[in-house]
Amino acid sequence: MLESNIKSLYDSFAPCGCFTAFENQTTDFIKEYTYWFLALNQKQEFLARSLLILKKHKTDESELTDEEVLEKHHIYCAWKKAIDHAFRPDKINQALSCNEERLHHGHLHWHFIPRYRRPISFANQYFFHDTPETQSLPIRSIETKAVYLSDTRELIKKELVRYL
Image 1: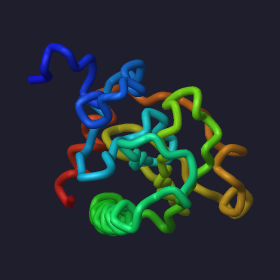
Image 2: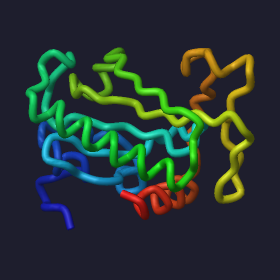
Image 3: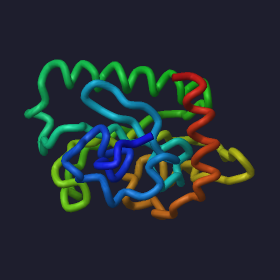
């Protein structure tokens, strides 16, 4: 149960209030760490696409402490192992673009984007898979920005968490 002065789940990790407007936090939240928290991206055109979000306000990777960098690496390795077991992606893209500070007011975050080179479905939903024409394209040129239903994201999270 959240304390009454905390407006959202993510505010309990980053009490600055920068994430209050993020919807479906309970659905998308995966795990909290010392410096970071891991969540599903609402845009699941790439099955199990996730976000690793820094709790503190920092806007460039060069600002990270050694401890934050090391923890980020450990989280990525655990997430990669879990997603390999759960969904077997063919490759992973990581992105740190820092282009949407207006949404989170300067919290660095990485996009972990599984890429599949075969048709992929889960929970009666079909997800994007690469073709020879799309496999070398950047995410922004092929994503649909479609937000998947909470029920579908809950099932994806449940499967991923089994291996974390």
